[in-house]
Image 1 (cartoon, rainbow, N blue to C red):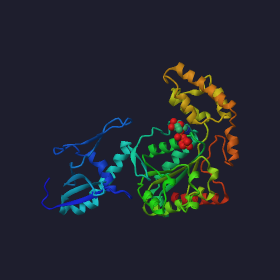
Image 2: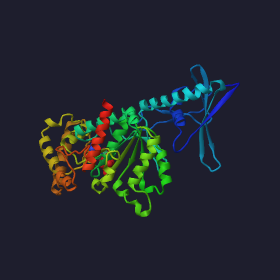
Image 3: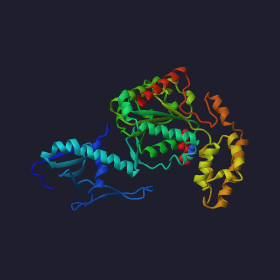
Image 4: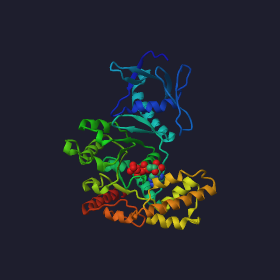
Length: 422
Ligand SMILES: Nc1ncnc2c1ncn2[C@@H]1O[C@H](COP(=O)(O)OP(=O)(O)OP(=O)(O)O)[C@@H](O)[C@H]1O
């Protein structure tokens, strides 16, 4: 395409923070005329979980577009820098007279379109913020596949929906639009699976931060700035990373203050998920609302959690009517078995559509539970008491504050909520 008075915008790939227009162009261009008369090469990928192939623009290729009667041309360029790394950029060319319209409306349109495309495509990214490695996030867990008390599941979904719908509220009260979740409980109870279910539900990218690999404030700042809006930042096993001050590194509390400051100025729709196997080892100051707003206890498998697994793995939709159900309930209530252990047993089933195999799997599980019981595992409720946790009848603990001060803070949150309701 020839432009007599052409203007070219250079849109470079940037690390931290990322260049939104650059990222958006990668999502937007394959949905317009990616294959046009001038196209010679095109990138194609397909991952196992994806049903269709994904197209990508290759270096040197052009994509024409029109917007409000304006002709535009995108060119993608990848060049080697002197230091050996690749520099990637888009060059967007159009007639100079349209510069105001392109800058004010077209680029915003491309970013918005990319957001919608992302929502619809279900393709999420998983990025390690320490190494900047990025892969497609393909964890299959959803709220349907998670073994958890139905009431707790509903509460979490409601909380997430409320959070994402409150842009105006956070703006009005002048707070960063973020929400912190603490997932705690023994290994194999589904903390990572729940994070995946939240990401899949909200269609948020996931960023993993390994605190132990961060050595300085500037490194931390760079890592945090590389995260994008509408994302979940995951910091796993925080009890193992809390006492770094001795080595002259930041503390977890310092990290949280740092994040507050940073995201108050430049972050929208951020979810931070911390996981720990030992909530009791955390400094109570870290557990306050505003820091970790919602505490979710992921416990050993309960009868209703087991129903979800039986339905998903064995194709038994109505376990209540099964002859072994009563015995299974009794065993689950008196034995500590993680959903991960049960999943492993269930994977041994030959054919989940075969009733005989499903029954044999349930019988095998009953034997497995009996063995676990014999091994002398204490009931879950005792363990919970030992850890000074409040556990309700369903063995779940959510939105719980433990000290008077935390209760007062929770009241503050409610007052804020009321402001919004008026
Ligand atoms: N609540 C659950 N519902 C469904 N599947 C589960 C659940 N918990 C565990 N699983 C199964 O067990 C596997 C391991 O669980 P997961 O990694 O989510 O546990 P975790 O609590 O994050 O463990 P860790 O503390 O060791 O990281 C999952 O991939 C999943 O197949």
